[in-house]
Image (cartoon, rainbow, N blue to C red; front, side, top):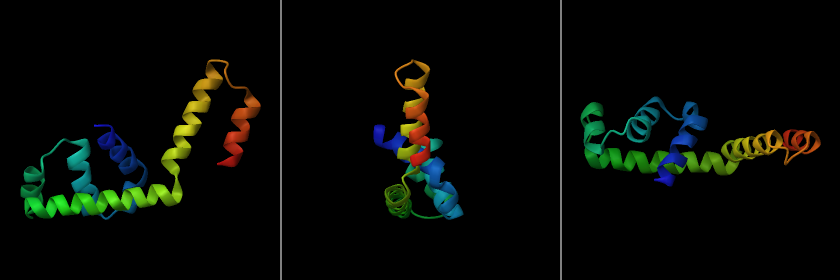
Length: 101
């Protein structure tokens, strides 16, 4: 389940880079909880075709994150902001993190 959430987050970050069809299929699968069969019917392809499509698009999203790291950077920033709000981080540390990004 955690892997599904991670892929959904990556889809939010990098979805615009994917083709419309890739985005539509992954969005249906991860965000709208459609089955492979439902997506296959909607797209006019086989269930196996959808499965292959999902795997290739997941690999592409993971590649984008590996190269660009937006999801990791956003997570670090959110964590620092939460620490700042609770007084466990000062403004200098937060500022330094933002500078590195």
